[in-house]
Length: 356
Ligand code: GLU
Image 1 (cartoon, rainbow, N blue to C red):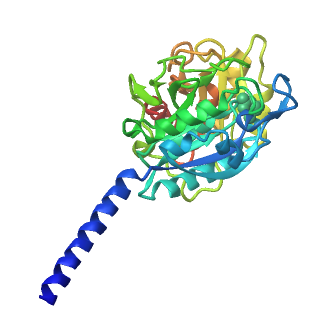
Image 2: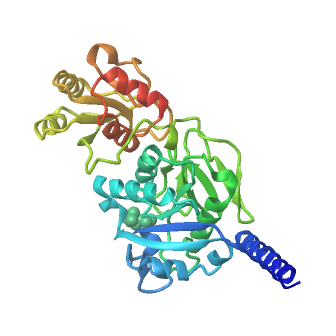
């Protein structure tokens, strides 16, 4: 009798334990890390209407405290990586961000990562991470155009949307995204297009990959470029990247900056050319001489959209150049730095510009 009672007690205890664990698992919210790097979203002004403000002023705790709704959709964990204006972003910070994100995403209970970032160089960080994060879990960059103290500050809504995008199952495998003003943009095509407007980020070639509506992402397409787990680049053991400089083309440009870059020992040059990545004769000659010396040369365009195509007006094969295809100069620089960790062969570099 006693034996039977203790057995039925044990059975009920196990059932109770299993059901509470099941319920806890059901109600447990996904964990999302917020890595804060500064920018206008963390900026403060002297009043709610003042145009002047200081970017990168408040810490991640205050950023999160401004959006109490986050606790309804996720278990958020904040980390302050740096607190800077994004014009001061560096390759070393990119590498430490990639290392930290890859470490975080290995944890099974983590749904993904949100990065708060100044808007000026946000597209470059997004593209760098798109090629170096080794996970299908979503990584979303966000920021704001108005400081945290402004009337109608856009930061809190952008932060909420970024977390909501990360926790949505359909965001998996979309590569690194940039989300602002209710639009989801893929890292390979997103670009800042207006100095002040809250809708500053656009995808000039392909359009957004989705929109946020009612706290959920609605995807309308996926990027067809290689990214994240499909990327061949591995920065896990790197603490710096090969030096690549961008030089701009314009009417009357000459070889001055190209020769200076070569003398400074750069490993690669992205020429932000006119039209379809064209360069005036003196610049072209200096670029050809640089390529002869083993410096990787990529022709890109200063125009906001359209491809820089190989061999159009310039005989790239004869000169040993690659063309950036859809990448703008600032993103071409990111890809060239990563490409140079693997090869200096211009044809192999050209393949990468087609694929990423
Ligand atoms: N220049 C600053 C930055 O990029 C502020 C611009 C912004 O975040 O919108 O961090």
